[in-house]
Image (cartoon, rainbow, N blue to C red):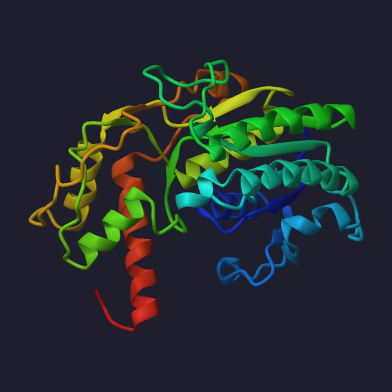
Length: 316
């Protein structure tokens, strides 16, 4: 087991990053958070004696010097630009992310880290009808997936050349507090809390959801026991139709609310099957998902509801 006491986290303000921050605090770990200058989401970061925030854009990672007391153990790289919409196929922008990932590897080394863990994506695979694992053939269909695949491969090579341990994760569908507003889960919760009828596909896609707290535990366990050079898929391994998840979410808010299932046609490149095979993750680290979708979605709804009430000043 690797000794993990001090962590560096880039891109910490999303669902997975914030959950990793909280898991580190729960374990009594010191954390250095690298946050983009001007980030409106920086307010999410809690005030805590174990946390230190450094405002630095990814473009500046190559210029940052190690001026902090003591060495860190592990670097979690979640930062990425151009994750949604047309930006996913902006090839020049996505190519910059590959360079920034390599810069993050060298920054990790300057900070004394022995391990680099990068956050990849299911987009590296493209469409497939099999459960996903590290060895599943990759065939990305957009610039985002292509760049994530390249970043994972190049950062592994770079980390090994400078004597660092490297682990790449391919994150499937993680949900929970701090998730992006454009995700299916977040947008559906918002619509139903506001008593709007959400327009949806028929929901026949087979999907795998993992709660953010479980994803964070997996990330920490990979830091301790993950195998150098391996790629791991982060998912629960449990598959259900999207329609089943949608009904469970709706029922947790109000079973009488109407759903616009079938109002949105499937896209030309619609992914119809997305499920992880987490057997290697479980075998190497001992990880087991602990939070069911029913429990996790109630926690997520509560967080979204409280956020809406805080921003609007009115009860929902």
